[in-house]
Length: 366
Image 1 (cartoon, rainbow, N blue to C red):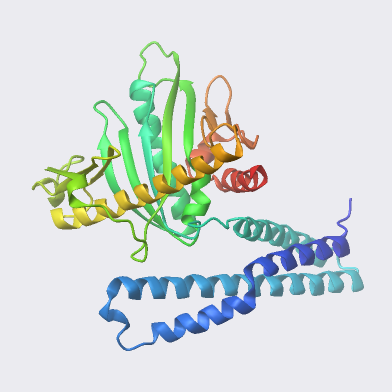
Image 2 (image 1 turned 180 degrees about the vertical axis):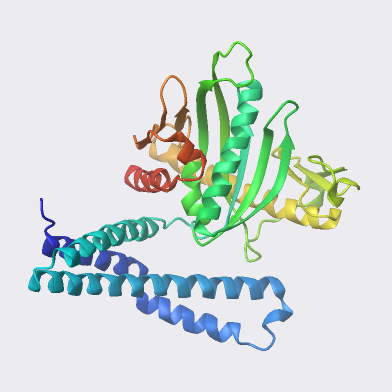
């Protein structure tokens, strides 16, 4: 059946108008102007942390505006291409227009998902922690598979990542791993991945080749910035230093540079062994601890509000996705019903469709 180009282009313009209404290009230009002024100040780099925040915010705002302007041009160009194809009765030009239409639809859908992220910390960088759960060595191996999946996803998008801490399991895989993703809206995007993930497969660690179910938990928190304030008295923190573990040979393994902070009032524990010095690791661990405490405070406030409202919905994120490799191949999100019959692509980082479905689901559920 031939594509109804006029209707499709009208739909594209309507969706784009809604995206523009939310992103507000005029306000974006004003913000770019203000940030450009701040970025050109001669004393900007006297405060390195503030300078990085300003330049990063400027780059993100410019990219956002560029994305909007590029999309408007693409829709205009598509309309011209269709007119040329129709007037010249040129099947090749119309086939090209059809291919471009598919690309514009996909990119517009991604932009639309971005407008659904309006949470207080959605724009922030994300700190993700993966912990192996029930299932022994298979669960530890599953945790390592999930770590690779998220790092590959970030790599596909060109997002910077930094593994902050890894705790290796005895036989294979990971007990836990924590990493940071630096990108606009990293927290808003990845927060829908929080919850319990389940893997069903023939265990490569079982010499009888039995099917094994294992679990891993994913926690996602926004990274705090210098402008956030949460006081953590020194008396509330127990500090342990130890030698970094993991594959040998790196200089980080030769001294007691790794740091473990325990927040005594809540029992929260943060380990950091990525940096070479104890001072750097302590500072990094403190940032993650403060991020977790901020999130905990927000969750407690939200729980209080829910209690007052009489909300008895199940908590967000429990047992949220199944990865089945045996007896059939299927990855299914239990909240959104989104599924894929290609687990190897998913484990290789092709998870955008699951994330987008999760963001839409979260918006409709609230």
